[in-house]
Amino acid sequence: MPTLKPSAQRHYLLNASVIVAALGYFVDIYDLVLFSIVRIPSLQSLGVTDPTALLEEGVLLLNMQMAGMLLGGIAWGVLGDKKGRLSVLFGSIFLYSIANILNGFVTTIPMYAVLRFVAGVGLAGELGAGITLVSEVLPKEKRGYGTMVVATIGISGAILAGFVGEFFGWRTAYFIGGGLGMLLLFLRVGVFESGMFNNLKQTSVTRGNFLSLFTNSKRFWKYLKCILIGVPIWYVVGILITFSPEFGLALGVSDTVSAARAVGFCYLGLVFGDFASGFLSQHFRSRRNIVLAFLLLTGIFIGVYLLGRNFSLTAFYTLCVALGFAGGYWAVFVTIAAEQFGTNIRATVTTTVPNFVRGAVVPLTLAFSALKDGVGLVPGALLLGVLCLAIAVVSILTLDETYGKDLNYMEPL
Image (cartoon, rainbow, N blue to C red; front, side):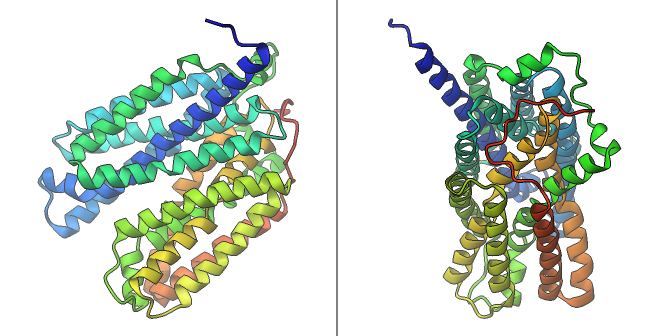
């Protein structure tokens, strides 16, 4: 067998890192969307039939999964800076795979809740570790393309989840998720560690100190802004799309809105939005301007969604695609987080930031419930959306531009 030239070998390894990171995010999104699809049938098969109990137990399981992702994000992030990016990519997917396979065997709600927590912990490391690795191994002029591929392929995991959730039983759907994870585990055997991290190990610099993000005011505000610019994405998904049946009724949509279809159309928009935002950030050589443009686009479509009336069902679902597209700056948002901090804390930041944004769904839904009871469904959602967008715009305008930034430096902790 002919030996590859060094340049060809490097090109192969770079591509392998991008594809492996992308498939990890694919599994991540598959599981998040799958749970929303199989929540009710899985609970009904476990003996929960009362509508109120279905909602309460579903919220419990979702909160357990989100708690796992929040705690896992911190743990995997610190591990990624202390032991390496690959240690997280191997450990996280293994834990997720085992938890999902066991999810297919659950017989009680407490067992289900524990395994949703464990699966959440496992999934928490996928995106952050993958983006960190890709950001560090690709040339600085091309890393935006790499993270674009990661996000675009990853988001399409929602499409597979929709197909599996509709045509297979819920237990089989979990087995498929676990099997995908195990397959990905074997694919990662040929991936190499980031050279920046290998160089970092030769120094005595402090690595992965999560608390250091809160002990320096400048570092803390930069970290917080990285989180806040992503919150509007999950406002759209967690409020406008999740409660689309209620909004459809309030807005006079001509037919009953299906939450499952609304989610599917939103994620379809996210696929194209992530590709577009990543490509445009490279073409215009700016992360900040592209995120700002997508935030403004999100504001426009939120206005159309909440202020319009008497949509046809087709028009409403088209608007869900548009909202997904406008919120598809996730790839650029996570890349910004990776580029804002030094190598010795980069994995901690890049892994915790997206998980804290996902966790923001909890305070967002609590705020929405309070506003809904106080001023009404649509006005409450509009007020909350304006607040999220305003904070995100201020945050991105006050962060440094990071396109083409040299990432081979240490953060003074």
